[in-house]
Length: 434
Image (cartoon, rainbow, N blue to C red; front, side):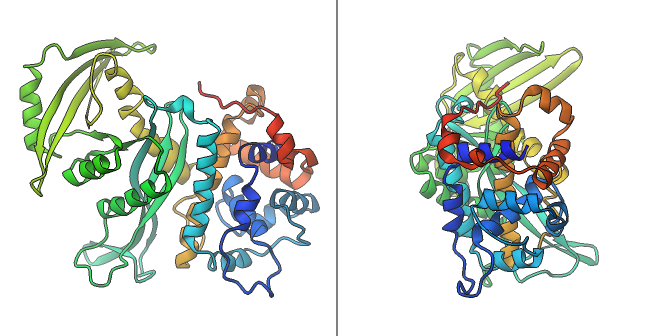
C-alpha cells in the first residue's frame, strides 16, 4: 500500500516535493530542525490515514520503517518524527495562500496530462460551488468569527466556500477554497456565501484563465450578480431553479412551457428511470440592479415505479434535444457530488473536517487545505489501476484501506523505484471511471 501511494504521487505529481519546498516558511531558517517538505507530509498523514487528529500521527507512525518511509516521500533525511506541536508551530508560519498554490499546481498537472478529460461536459470542466461549516465554538474564537444567536446563546463559527471539480463518475477534487469570515471592521453585515463567491470567482479566473469551466450552483445563486460574473468570465453555468428563488421568472417560465410543445424529450436510463424533459430559451430576467439577462431554463421529471422526482435549472447553455439529457445527467445532477463525495465524506468518512486540528488562525486554514490535498491524492489512489479490484474488495471499505495504508507505512519500506519520478512516468495508471 505504501508503494502504491508513492507511485501514485510520483506518477501524477513528480514535482510535488519541489512544490512543497517552495511553500513560504517564515521561521528562522538558521534554527530549524525539520524541513518544510517533511512537516507538510506529516501534515497530510492525519488525512491520508484518516486518523482524526494530528497528535495520532506520532503514535501510528512510531517505527523506524515509518520514519524511513516519511523521509522517502518527503525526500528528506530527518532523524526523528516531529512532535505535533512542531507541525502546528510550522503551519503558523505558512501563509495559507502559499500552501493553496500547491493544490493549484496539482490541479494544473492533472489537467495538462488529460487525466480528467473523461468527465468534461461538452468540453468544459464542471466546477460545483457550495459552502459548508468548518468549526463551531461556544466562546468567541477569534475576531473574524461569524455569529449566530440562538435564544440567549451566541454560536461562533467558521464556514468555507468550496469550489470542487466534479465528474459524473464520482471524483470531487478541490479547486479552490474561500473562507467566510468577518475581516472588515467597518462592515455593517456579516460576511456571507455570496460575498465569498465574488472573491473566489476573481481568483478562479486569475488562476485558471484559459480553462473552460461550467459552474454548478444551488438556488441561492439564482441572481443577476452571479449571472453577470459568469458572463464576464465566459463561464457556463447551471443553477438550481426553484419557484422561491426568482418568483417572477418562474411564473414566466411556467407560462411559456405550454407555448413550446416542441421543446420536449423523453429518455430512459439504464437503471429503468423514465425522464421527461422540457425547456424554454431566451427568458428575460431583470435583476435588482436593473440589469437585463437572457437565460434558458429546463426541467426533468423522473419516474421509476411509484417514485417520482422533479428537477429544474437555469443555464446559459443552448438547449436542444441533442444536449438536454447530457446537461441534466452529467451536469445539473452532478451538483450533489460536492455534498456526497465532498463534504459528507470529509465530515463522516474519516477526514474529520469539523475537528479543530488547531485553533490558530493560519493553522485552521492550512490544515483545511492539507485535508483537501490529501483527499485529492486518496481519490487518485483509490480509483487508480495500481490497486486491483480484488485488493479493493478485500479491504472492504475505504476506511479499511486507510488502516492498511497505515500498517504498510509502519511496517514495510517503500521500494526505492516507487519514489523515482522517471520510473513512475514509465508506468500507466488508469482511473476507474465506471
